Length: 126
Figure (cartoon, rainbow, N blue to C red):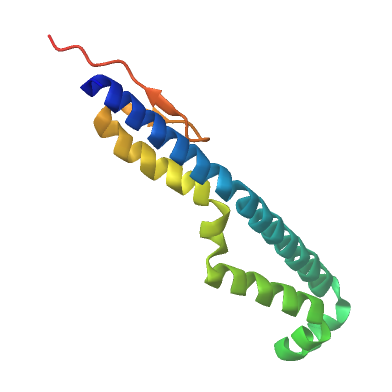
């Protein structure tokens, strides 16, 4: 095998592995996105109910939170999810593709969001 054929096979293997890694992350990413949307919507609904309650004006902050346990638990769950790093889990495929693009620039290549390699034309020197 020539050097060019070996390089081509290596690029194909790299592309297959990159697309496999990104494809494997998609189901988990979708699941984390659904969890985040559900908890954020629950927090927003709980906040609306908490703020529109006329009793909230007369009660202390702690007593108001105890009166609205739905909001308290939803907001606590949202804070806990962000502490656990859900913001990174939601965008992990795009983190991998952006870092891969940064490395591939040195080789005059790029990749799309699915991991397919994009070969750029060689720069002309004059």
